[in-house]
Image (cartoon, rainbow, N blue to C red; front, side, top):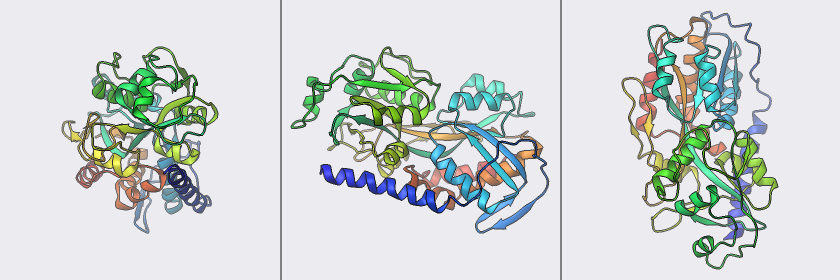
Length: 374
């Protein structure tokens, strides 16, 4: 079983590297924003309809970075008149740049707050920003405990680990969940995000929903619990887990697969512990409900699901754009790029990078919403 798990991680990581290698020759985005000239450039490149030209700037969620890298390479290879530059600054910073009018759209792993919607009316002419879900996936809990490559935890134990209530890997609570495992007398070193992060928001929403008595803190993009160590971005926390014996942290599955980092199986109340896989995340995301109003497609995720095979620590990354009143010089390119992301082709490549495609019924609404942007 342990050998199978290691081989599975290596296979997925190898698949991602193959895709990356095949796409390495395609054009990447540019940081230069001086060339945004708008225009009516329109052509069909394969299944991608290219419209607009110039520089398309966006920033935000680091959770979707690996997916965005692939999307940008595919799109710019087909649509050479548009240079797409996406900076993984974190959800909080991305929303702030969008609200300051610096970017055409933002990526966020959390839906807009009411005050952010209000602020967006300053940059969206006679309108406001909306949440457009585009990519989903599991938030894996990666660990580095000697040569251990299989570990089961539940929400209560995770909450106590990240709240510094359980501090050693041979704690009785961990032993009980992992009978027969060789758990060392080793200090637990939990890492959390130092930046405001939608990944943190979703992870703490899971802890609050699934273990409310063990997690006294309010969910949010900023980490509230005491103790632990911090690192910047998903790349930062995952690299710490890779390097530090005794470490544990939360990050998107793509970072675990690319770094060959083993991940926690979750005891949820289902018949068997649930692995962090795109398929299992899709089962949980399919239970999500649209709670946004009008064209806003904010989702309510089922963090406390006990459904068989449903992995509950999930996130959905939204692209944040103006429903109306988008900047004229980037509107067509924004719609063209987001149309590709929401298309069957755009969604079908996600699994290669450890992400989950949108459920069909949500994807249909997303395509309708993108088409109506003005």
